[in-house]
Image (cartoon, rainbow, N blue to C red; front, side):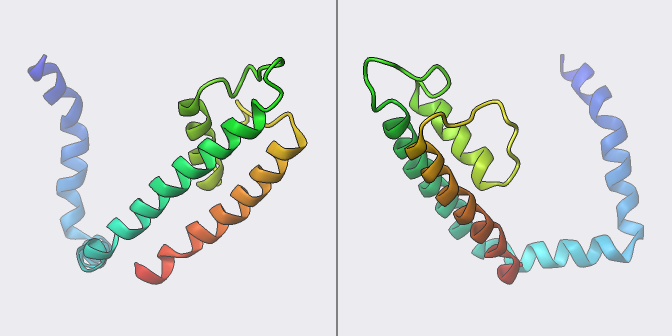
Length: 123
């Protein structure tokens, strides 16, 4: 299994080896090296936003207890929805069905745009 893994990684490792001849990759490496100490802050902020918005979406989408929402029936699914929404990917596999859920999602989208714009000043 390790041999198969090495066979799969060989083309990728060869491409990485070729990057040392390009000045742009050296610039990218130095920029990442300089900004690495500051990156835990946005990662922690993403974790907080994921937990908070996932919990709020779970609460508002399951508020009519007699009619459970099929898509948002667990907190991890709601956290997945929060990550996808905050990162502005938006797969479309889950979507809120209540007006309160749509309102929370709107706040989540705006927060996601602000979150994505914030690390640009760090890097």
